[in-house]
Length: 210
Image (cartoon, rainbow, N blue to C red; front, side, top):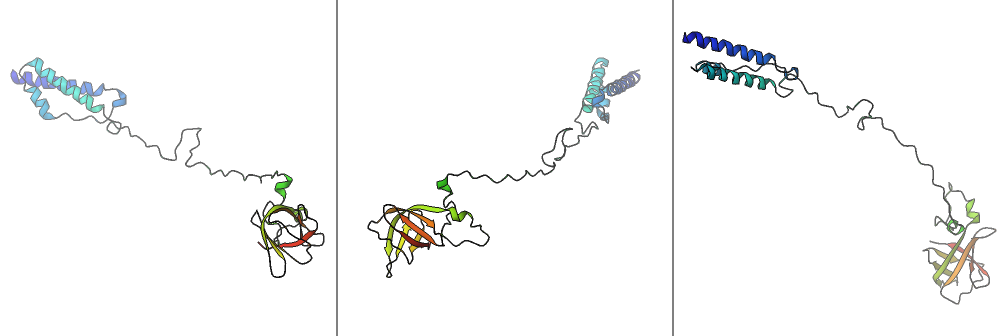
């Protein structure tokens, strides 16, 4: 009789475990986790029928919890989102087309007449062949002499406040009596450059040396 009851409890337990396994929600379905036979045997050896059934019920609940595992354990594979994937309608910043912005138009130079004069610091220097000299006809230089000296031929060398150095050539009528003076240098009508000194009569033919 005891053996019959024990086998009866075991059968009930197996039915209970099978029922719990089949009624687990669909989202948790997967490969059922096997119940250790030694645990079943231990529950079946309990003489008290109520305690034995409680033991079997605990095993059944444990089997159901084992099926509620992570997606990898329950058969639901998690597909990692690749670096280049994106949601529908969204452009992936890493794999999208390389759009190069159009080049900006050249900035228009809006300058006052004072700035237009010798704006590149090349006034008086020999022009390169590829450079246009059309604008050079209208250029003139305004500066201030900070010091000067005379060579053995009596020609002046002028050092301007903008860092340029100009030297007097033949045909000059300049006679300096003060160390500093405001000057203007203009291109001559027949070539070369002439210096006009503020407050002084006459002009001097000069050329730029630096």
